[in-house]
Length: 195
Image (cartoon, rainbow, N blue to C red; front, side, top):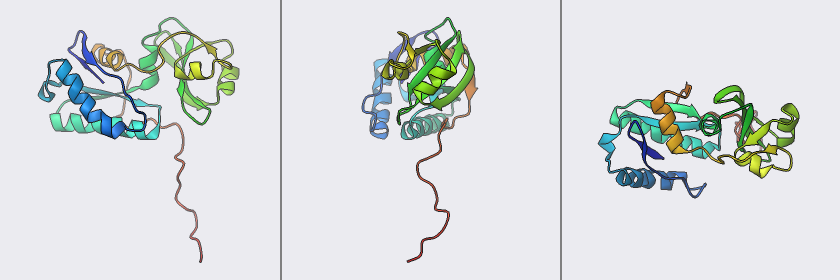
């Protein structure tokens, strides 16, 4: 999370503890606001990366953004998390790949800061075959450097970059709902079991 005043990032924090989103987010928001010398009523907009990403993390982030926006009466902004990573790179073409777990990556193809394909989810070898020789940036590139043409760059989306990009109108905005690229693991039964 980050606090941005329209021209610079005043304070930011990165998430720790991937399995404790709900417990850590509210205290982290309070801490970042305090470090920026701000209070909740100073917030004028709320921005959130809507994915692609893990189900729980996306739900917690999006619901928190919606709740803050509604309770404060301020606009909310949803942005593809891969676009936030791409905003730090420049040049092109290049791929952004993040860890999708299950030995897969979430990815998108960029030419400069413009997304030209994706987001999608694939196995690293399928992505390498789809875009041979294209450099890949992000945590997924590092995890699968043996398969992907990994290049140095940011590993995870930055809240400061998200805030600056939303302030500048640099991102295509998406609805404030999680951008899931997979079907859930759990499904309703198709027939009733008999005892």
